[in-house]
Amino acid sequence: MVSRVIPVDPFDLVIFGATGDLARRKILPGLFRRFCSGQMPEEARIIGAARSEMDDDAFRQMVADAVREFGGGQACEDGTLDSFLQHVGYEHVDAMGDDGWKGLRARLRPGLVRAFYFSVAPSLFGALAERLRSFKLADDDSRVVVEKPFGHDLASAKALNATLAQHFHETQIYRIDHYLGKETVQNLMAVRFGNMLFEPLWNAQYVDHIQITVAETVDVSGRGSYYDKSGAMRDMVQNHLMQLLCLIAMEPPARFEPDSVRDEKLKVIRALDPVDYHHIVRGQYGADASQPGYRVHVEDERSTTESFVALKCHISNWRWAGTPFYLRTGKKLKARASEIAVVFKDAPHSIFGPDAGTHRNVLAIRLQPNEGMTLDVTIKEPGPGGMRLKDVALDMSFAEALGADAEDVPDAYERLIMDVIRGNQTLFMRGDEVEAAWNWTDPIIAGWNRRGEVPKPYEPGSSGPEDALMLMHRDGRRWRDIRA
Ligand code: NAP
Image (tube, rainbow, N blue to C red):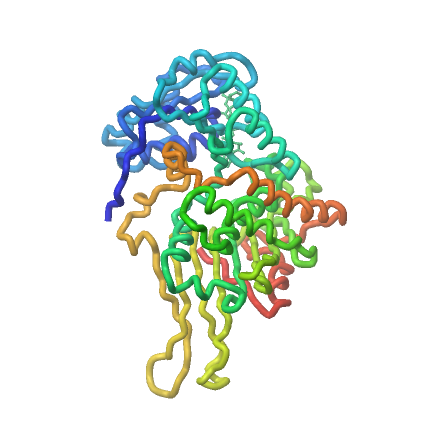
């Protein structure tokens, strides 16, 4: 099935940091795919900006290389790439100086949607925002897109919000968390609020616990110097896992509109209890015979930064009081797999007697790989010989169910950039959400530092440290297997 594509309004999109890794791997190939889908109007312009000196043609060559390397598919070869490149230009601009700003302004056209993507280090956000105003490139209708990390802690996030707020209204600021752009994450809301089936059971009375796992197989080599100052808590939990937790736990918003959704997410974060330090496990991958450990990938050979976190938390509100939420994420684990699993309680009484065993319904929402959902239901084992029960999964891959090629499903970045052009902030984090999330994670990190806690080592290719398994075993529960 070919999905319906509604073209967006004509726009000028300036990408600061257009020569960088994120622009080359995600933003530019994503824009090309939207162009191929017919979503980008003829008048759309994409202007790369960075300090490197190059002309339009040199930048177009860089864009063509990036698109070929990071996902243009067949369309690159049939002339579509050349057409796309006609929409692309470049201006050399220094965020910290006055070079290039007038030239950039001359490229912008009046009366169109105007968006500025800050794909640069956060230390440049303030300088960019200030110059966009002082050189009169941005007005009160312009949009700015800012990348993570959004601060390092509550104080720095507040400072960053305050800096941006000097130049832009909250309604102009799009803080990207690309997890929110994933098809499955939005499907989570469709499943919860578009069906009658689940929502009545979606509470502490029927849900035993919820597990959220974001497991990666990659190590931190190549980004060790950034990662070592951050760690899994700041890099993954404070933003991505927190957003997933919010969407799974929030009350139904009155409407699928930016502030209705974001108000509900904020209430979840504010209702989170502080985490007992006995309920958190930090890990760091070690070496094995064939591969180096974490400390080889970072400068500090005695680093105590965590590459893995597992924790149990509680949301103190009427819906969830007493239901634990278990979160885990890590690098160098056994598979690249992310899922949210809602584990329902046992039936209150088994009419099949003790031999039938215990069976549980589990709704698992897979974010990657192969986005989809499974619902474990209990049925009778086929054949004679009495009533033996067995759990089977109703398994739905979204791509298969919708008849779409994986390539047809827009990548998170593509979708989010198009939302910026449309002016839809629903899938972007509001400033107060980001601050509330830091407010919850800061004491956890401060506690580790105060106690001088050292992460538990774990084997590369494993499920994380033994203590993370124990975190659930102690409660008579177990993690679901991490499977690709
Ligand atoms: P990067 O590869 O280091 O690129 C940085 C870009 O900024 C380059 O284009 C650089 O070009 C430009 N730049 C540096 N100083 C500048 C200045 N004074 N004026 C104008 N441009 C300047 O970084 P990245 O990995 O693309 O990351 C960009 C942002 O996205 C960061 O905030 C990062 O945390 C975030 N992010 C990245 C990823 C990822 O996968 N890479 C994922 C999530 C978030 P010149 O040197 O030519 O100026």
